[in-house]
Length: 276
Image (cartoon, rainbow, N blue to C red; front, top):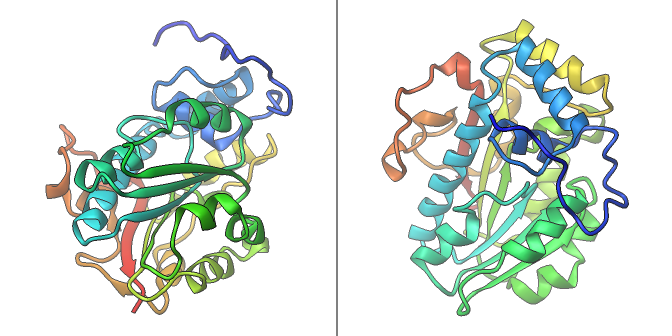
């Protein structure tokens, strides 16, 4: 990997560059340049605990694209992507508007560096619309009450809710199941939830060490078991093939990874569910 430089932003105010942020750590693990020393240190320590730590972010991005393609092919033309992360093309609007140019996407993240890039890069087809909300997943009122959301999306029509690789950064004390339930309650029947989540089912000791690395730097990471991840889909109709390790979820909708990673290397479950 080339020598890393600090992102060239007009201002670094409120970026909290002294501690890692999940979006910037993921950016580093994906080979990006929009991260800081604290992010790289956390990522490198995580890699020492689990040398395969670059694989989950890559598979998450591939799953996101397959899930969006699937939803767009079902006629979903509105998307709410919470925990957007630093843009990595093709992003949600590229995939959705590639199928339906009139698709509308609202991105949500709470990192200023993501906001800076979103304003510059998350612009879609002129027939559709892209908006950005600066908010934390745990602040449901801010998200649902945002003018950017209500102006861009018609909440009387089905929406694709995307929660990709974000809920493992929400501890049990914040009841992530209740957060998901509140979001889904605001969406009409026919909406979908696409979700992915780290699991410790395959390498519990390694992921416990990775989580401890992040905890010491002020970042919550809580891997969960398959039954606890399935709870997020309570009341929804799971789309075939149900909850799977990511590469096994509709691989025909994307480009296969060669060589295909093992389940324990990926250690992320994903699924799509429909609100009846």
